[in-house]
Length: 99
Image (cartoon, rainbow, N blue to C red; front, side, top):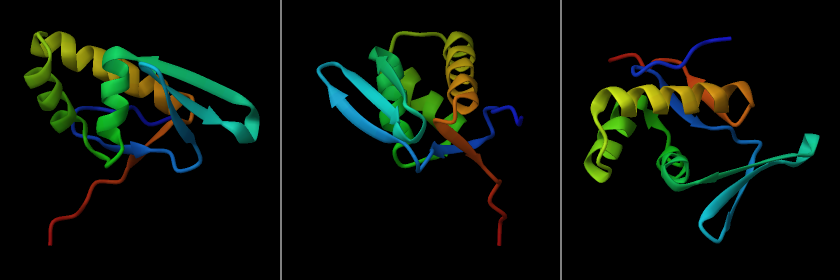
């Protein structure tokens, strides 16, 4: 399986349903009966993924919004995203070619 890096472009997997429940987001893979819940910073990451984008840009946004050092932010975001991809919740998109 491909590993997500800071240079990766990622998006939510189109087969998942997302529902806001109080301070959490529940992500459903109803087709196989699996549901996942995310809160706090993971919820914010999920919100930022709604439009897709580069992982490095996502980290830059989080660094502006939270009191966290770059190394910790990047490590934790990559861990979260790689886990989410292994669960089929997000996908890594091919690099866009420059015209």
